[in-house]
Length: 326
Image (cartoon, rainbow, N blue to C red; front, top):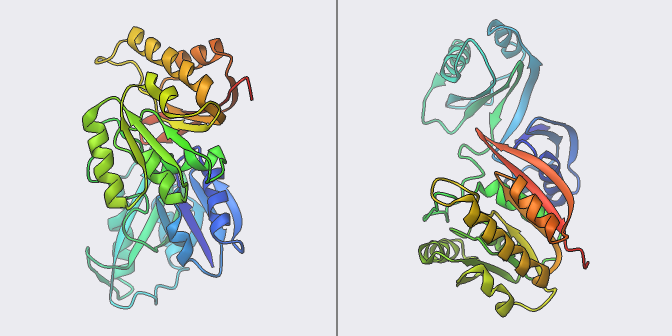
């Protein structure tokens, strides 16, 4: 049986590795833009993956020029698995002369004419996944987004996507026994995901008391063991030993609220602390990279890898550094 895991654009390889780590028998057939096509004999464990958004059984994959092309593919699909009723859900990326509701309605009518009842609340969801001129047709295995986290009750307006948070942790390849720190933890998403993945010594620091309060609530709901501290980053070297940490974080950037000069000062202090406590790699997710990279270079941190991740209209740079001492 073939399936598709939908992930974030830019972390496809990380998500594929996670799937294979969950199921050793899983075979990756093809990696496309934010999509991993794979086969497996058992799909249940894959639903536990932290870096995927949707998961569906694949019925058809094809290129199209007009909506009528969908009708040709639908004729080839056996919909006898629909026992009671169905609903059509559509994801669409790119420029088209139709919207998601148009194509969902069009396909819903075709399946309806085959004798199946439409129910918008149905547990059987036919999924139409469109990327530019490419279409996938399948059945959702979980109706809700797998990226949804029930523990996320209190959210910072600067929070990061949980799939991105999980990917940062997996990218670090750090040992689960090694201490891990997010010094700009906000609502706690990165340290909580680390704890849920299985890291034993996870810390979060934030200078805003309300952020720490939110992170504590979220970590309690997640049943995640995270040590959270309310303080400024210039206290890091008083909490942690020299050459002891992996750092994974999403630093703030300049905005209408915080000036570039303030951010420059913050980054300088961050790297001053990092050069003392960093043991292994530092993994950063940031929306503006130039200033951060420049200051990293001035502190002689070596940039090992850079990649771009797209989440809707927002782009993040994932930057991986190594302390020049290591």
